[in-house]
Amino acid sequence: MQTEKKKICVIGLGYIGLPTAALISNLGYEVVGVDINQSTVDTVNSGNVHIVEPDLDKYVQNSVLSNNLKAYTSPKESDVYIICVPTPFKYEEGIPSPNIDYVMSAAESIKELIKEGDLIILESTSPVGTTGKIYDLINSTDVDIEKVSIAYCPERVLPGKIIHELVNNDRIVGGVNKKSTDNVSSFYETFVNGNVLKTSDKTAEMCKLAENSFRDINIAYANELSMICDKNNINVWELIELANRHPRVDILDPGTGVGGHCIAVDPWFIVSSNPDESKLIKTARVINDYKPEWVVSKICMEVHNIKSLINRKPKVACLGLSFKPNIDDLRESPAVEVVTHLLEKNINVVAVEPNIKSHNKFSLSSFDDALDSDLIVVLVKHKEFLSKNSIKKITKKKFLDFCGVLRS
Image 1 (cartoon, rainbow, N blue to C red):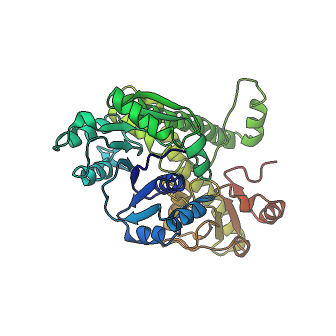
Image 2: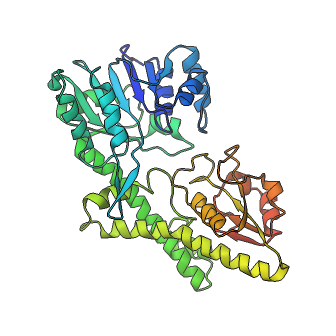
């Protein structure tokens, strides 16, 4: 694969930035990884990883040993700059709205390094118009902006399959002009096996938000069904299985809520900018944000019933903390929200999360040690809870299953 000896600077070594840096450095590019966290920089430079992701440790180790990947706390002059920093939300008048401070700070950190012919790529999920703001920032420097390519290329990967999907998924590239779109597309074509689809920067930005809003709406439907079925004493898992036998129906599985830094966040980026036109998107967000509260109410009701029988404070084991199965990512996790609220209600809770070693807020337990609890609550469908032996152990106790681990 021809890398043209370009030097790449990846800003942000998190769940997207580190896999991206590791992947392209394994392909022969010289990569500078940048993160403001010194501990992250030291970990990467030692050939290790600070996040759980299949095969990532091997990619990082190979890249560091070959000297193709080096991490720093500040950017170095390169030919391609890829911004992969967080875009959290802040609250304005009670409505979550996107915070692009990290994105603009990253752009600010490289603006004096930019030279003619460079590519500047934003991958962070961002509200419409963010790529244009980066263009304006670079345009304020002495560099000839017409000789710099600036584009948005959203990541669209699934945690647990990031390396595979970075290579094989289709990518969307939206440049601030045609030249930018073409040049950045040519770069992605050196390591992407999927199609590289060209569009404008604003369309690419909206596409990422639209994709995750679509998923959020579908999950909201499943979560709302689960609450309706509970009220009517209907097995929601059986209902969904039967309904999905219709050739044009494909209802998703309900869960504890919606988490992660994409689906739980991105719809608000649309709502905050288009409040009058995004009523369905906002309603889906409200439903999914409410689901952990509903889960807490069901657990508290069961705890009250158990307490009346045993005349002491029941012990509750909550299985799973991450926002989705088989990863260590707790960002925006509904399971974390549930456990937090239970502790606030002075309920005796122990958490089981096989993908992390410790937590600064929760008491962690092994799965087997947690089985002495009076109530087992399944919040995340981790593989460790799915074996026949694990299910047999869970069902020997009083349990509540909110993610379908025990479905027949």
